[in-house]
Image 1 (cartoon, rainbow, N blue to C red):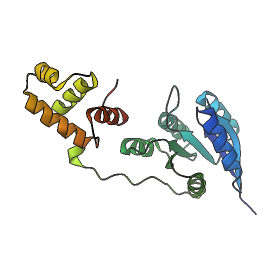
Image 2 (image 1 turned 90 degrees about the horizontal axis):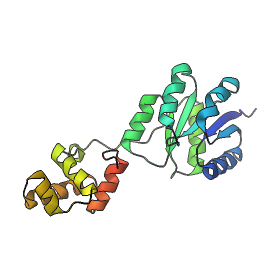
Image 3 (image 1 turned 180 degrees about the vertical axis):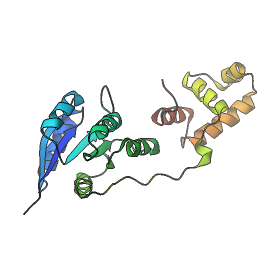
Image 4 (image 1 turned 180 degrees about the horizontal axis):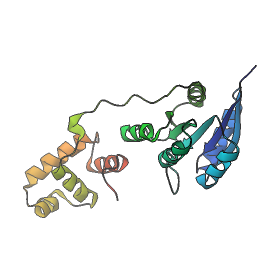
Length: 202
């Protein structure tokens, strides 16, 4: 007898949500109970229709899948939650683990991969991407963070030099170090990567 895995989906992008629902329902043994764009109705629905698997987007309009996972796991440790994300940053994966999620899947992975992970989690496995080994040099110094914030404000090397009362050569050295540590190829790239990693709020 085929086991039916009951699934609830939450993603605030309607097209993504509907596409995901359609694809998962084509999988043998999968049944999508409900698909929500707004997690507000989620808790009351879960009480009446507990699923086998909850698939949550990490980034939602007024909250995050990680926060929802924390809250739901407090009251229902048995609920199996898969977090779906457009990013595979170590910080997100670690936060998902800490929140009590059972798996973390990136949107870049195939739908077949998500279907496999759903089956694995249903069978009690925990599935997370391999974290990148910690590289000490990736940590920005306080001075580098100060300079990065000024770069984000569009200050030139000369202006940063004046602002921090250090030589232009020292500023250039720090900028080169920042670009390298943030795996970027320009000042703009460094700012973009810093925002993605949560080092800068603009």
